[in-house]
Length: 142
Image 1 (cartoon, rainbow, N blue to C red):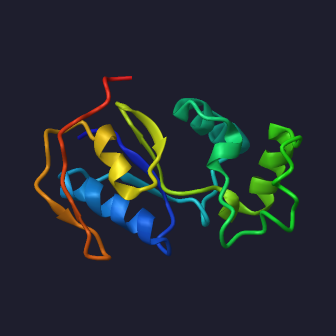
Image 2 (cartoon, rainbow, N blue to C red):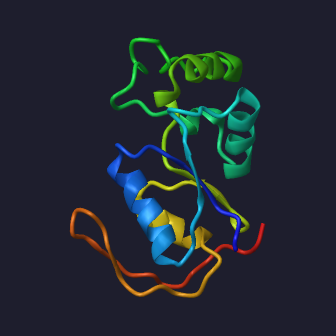
Image 3 (cartoon, one colour):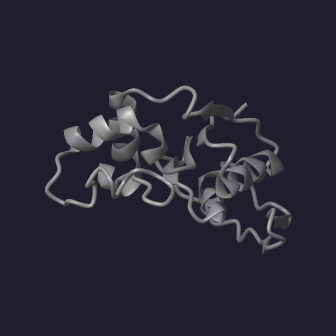
């Protein structure tokens, strides 16, 4: 089976929709509930690098101590950001999905479609009732 990992928070609707979309594709991913089993600093660094985005792009502001910790300061180093994530894993945005086609923060949830190594999927209804139509467009293999 295809090797897919989702860094998941079951309390997050977007994360639940992404997990459901992966399963809708007939794939059972490795699910990492990162609040219970936080990734290491090196894993977080590698995830950010794999997305092609700076580490800061993986930070979540809403519902976290982002503001209280002063993480909006653009002068903070990656090490300082990693210190904060290590102390408060909720700062890591979700869901992050790793597949053979790449790694991405899948917000909105349908962003996961371009990472799924399968053909076009039938329509999928998200938990809010929105219907997702898969164009079949996928990334080239990483």
